[in-house]
Image (cartoon, rainbow, N blue to C red; front, side, top):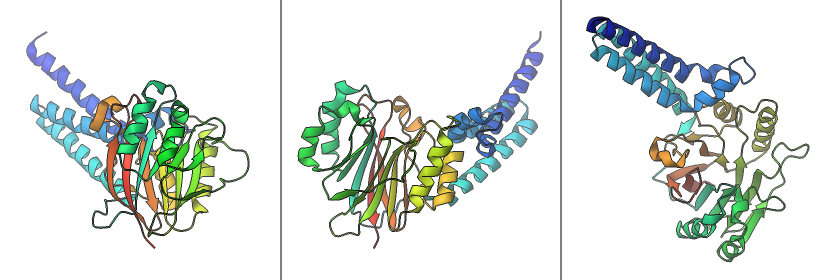
Length: 317
């Protein structure tokens, strides 16, 4: 087999992979969970930017290998789809309102249920973050340090039984009762009213969702969350581990049904080892006069498989 044949086959393979990446970056978000490819779609739609970036890189590689026409066509198609993807996300997100004065700093961190060895380090890092409100998922790993954290954060909601989701605060908060009825959430949802000094009270909802491909369970959970959020009047902040990026189908459905807005540039949080190249499956959304003024990662080296979020929020009247 001569070199030209090998090159042609390589070009064909690269172009095929590029087209597959284009499909993986655009089609999954349009597929329902209960469709034949629904489970795979819910796995892929959170990594759409990576898939589109890979498609563009492979198309350019094909052009460099000599297929400049075919590679150029696929590259232009990839760029067009990147533009479409960016427009869809822009319509459901807001840039940071850096010109506003923040009223409250909120920390969210999925601790990891068996991360007990790092409990003291997590508690210390949380104190040093300067956060007014701490929200933890899989917080049973912090059971031993919660009493010491209460010395600095005396207001608390959650951890009544299983200690899944807990909210600790320096500023007054009042737990609000989640929607009645059979709960798909258990203790994975906390809802509180927070009153920062000199600002209007706002509702903070902390959620730890099921994996989005858990058909038969996650649909009811999503419905219940939308209902709970639409019952909230005034400023609202929703934060938590959604196991899905803000541009995924479940997050887009949540945003469209509730009027929430995601950050324009979300923080990649999973896996923690990937740093800025990870997937933003832990998220914060705002509505009703609440605006993000700053958003940063937290806890890269605290033993969890997630990075956390440290958000500054301005609360309008």
